[in-house]
Length: 367
Image (cartoon, rainbow, N blue to C red; front, side, top):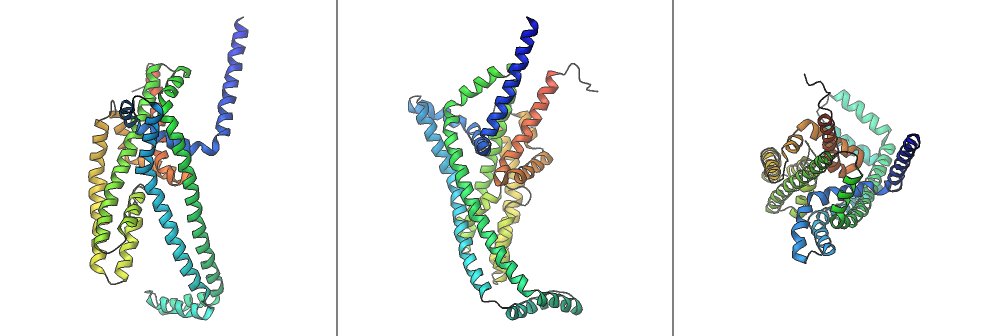
């Protein structure tokens, strides 16, 4: 009898493993969108709970309203930015392609010769460089044309992929709001861990998702609005540049410098030194130091203080090495959306290590 029970348990374990692997394989095209929707739903679930009584506890209405709110405040602005970038790149592509089409090896060589004289190199080095460019001018023109085409295809391809990704995420968001508590309860029942550890993992995931999402969006909003106002002041397209600053602020270390440095260089090249100086001051001092390094830790502490039992989560969120490495790793593996995935995955891994340490505290050597 005991032998049969052990065989049943082993067989059931194999079936469970096959079921999990099969589901992961089946839904693999949608896992990134589902995980992003899960982070959004977890971070904003308190909003859903506040709206629920106002719609007579109708879960469908509340889930639909919060999903629309997330779409309007997060997804729609980023979608606008991508479409605007696509239009701008398309216009630039047309102009560059027309310029490249009228170039000949002779005109290209003359242009290169003028540019080489501006480079602070010895005359014999300039002569050797010009000779190399002269002998490969046709290949350089062809490479430039192919590079422009590749860039445009990449931008428009990424835009289409992003819109599809976000549409699926919003669709899943509705069901995470409506059925989230049932899903968590069901997972707790299925988990062989004690409920204390299940609640610890769920609480850590919820707190970290909230801290990450709200702090990132808060910093992005402050940097985007401040840069947009300055851009309008100096006669630049404030809405577009503000959105670009907000999106690039997600990237650690370099962040919004990807936008304000090229803008400052273009203004300086046009002789507008005062405007370029203001852009540099706003980007390096206001956004780069005050908002990013001074206000970000304050905001994270404020958000964590409003969450129950978020002290350990705050320590992980403020760990610079883990945060930076996990963010860049997420960026490499998942693209732009990995800026959210990386820190959350790393933090959940640390939580599992903590659970293991608590579970086996009596046998671990802590000396």
